[in-house]
Length: 165
Image (cartoon, rainbow, N blue to C red; front, side, top):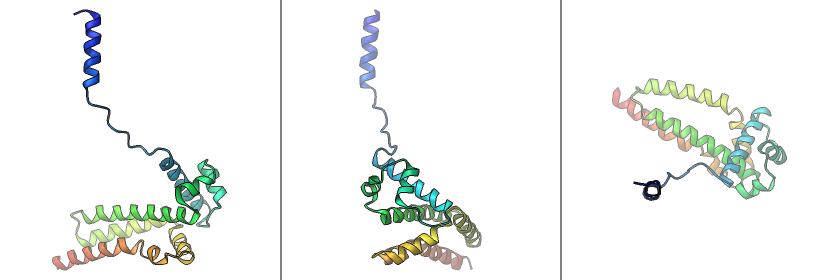
């Protein structure tokens, strides 16, 4: 087999091989959205929960202020998205904990440890939730953000404890 045939055969096999797996990394607006949320989180930590200005968030995220409107609509929606991101993390932690084989007492101990850890990680969370609750039309939704996650966990824990006793 000559060099030309080998190259042709290689090109043919390369073109019939399976395509590269899709790249699921965030792109464009998703990256900007994450940068804005991360910048907001950092500034809230630094400012002990006092809401930073839009220009401070955008400067930290290295984006123009118009990107907040593009990604979230307004500052309040951006802050809500940050609370939602925290809520989703708490929900995932609770689901993992509920799936363990630990007895209810140890699950509750781990849960309390996680609550304390989350207060340290997100000391602004309670204050931010209160601010959003008092200033938005959809107070009901924000009021139940964490309750909707915690109540089912506590109910499962209670049922499991009752079965064991």
